[in-house]
Image 1 (cartoon, one colour):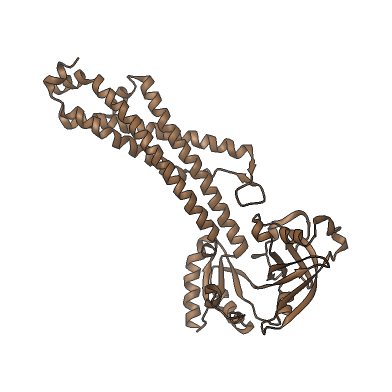
Image 2: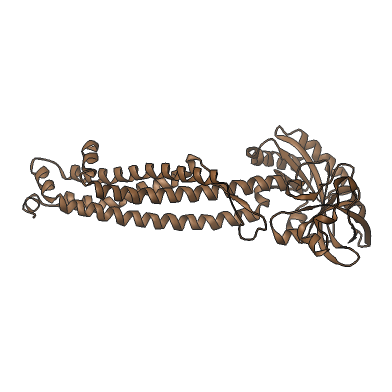
Length: 414
């Protein structure tokens, strides 16, 4: 039957080519869009791991924002106990600690509020050094005590530009004054020297962000505690299993701490995923409807053109079910052929886009990002199924009519 169906669909080549073209175009469009979204999602996931580590451990009050003052801080003794548990985990690779502070930062003429992340300069976990601007000075180095890296927006508010940093062998850079409240509520002020400028791509973040050595943050806040422990694992795939093991060990050790994964912390990534997911579903539904009515029209025309043929094969003993199956097979073959060609076409378009190395400025970002299509066959499953399913559904009615037609009526049809 499939052999006969294949011959039938090429009896009218022009109509068949048009149908296959429409199916292939829809499939290719979905494949390319899915690849674009998948690359964005993958890239934001990788960036989330760089910025946040695979796991973050903190007091539950820190995550719920219900703490008064700095009561969510983790003491050095607790950090040592947690690190001992981490070293027992087979997927553990490295860790660091972080302490965030807020306050005022200013020069002789200008000032602004800021939020600084106190990090260990020797650690590469969540260091943000990958975001350092071109010719934007240097990042924090091991042993730094009184240096700071400013977000480009915050530096602009303070009147500091790349030209003010000077050659790298002439640090310290421009001085700034930082004022913040200690954990006990008293005010403390210190001098810092701007060592570099960084750019996250999000203007609202760059306007408040600063990165300081952990020792400086602890000194100005007058504490030895930290707000969270950032954990690096051997792979992203190990995140959930490692989280479950560590949660169990923390409970057994009597430590009231909560673990968040990089995916839990990537809120913007989830919002973008939901947005593009809705667009993908809308486009998929539109293509389904387009292919459905296109194939429905083609199969209906084929039914009327082959009325006498249907009567002839019925007269020589062909069953209704066989006629029904023949028409359905023709529609399915059109869908499969168009789907395969569409995937090949989409792959080719994606390859050309990747080779063109196109950059654009995404909404809400201040830096250019690459326009890339992630070429994996898994992204073709959805578009291919939509093409096959839409042709199958659109063929059912013409096939049912062809199977139900009376033999005498079909033979005398003109």
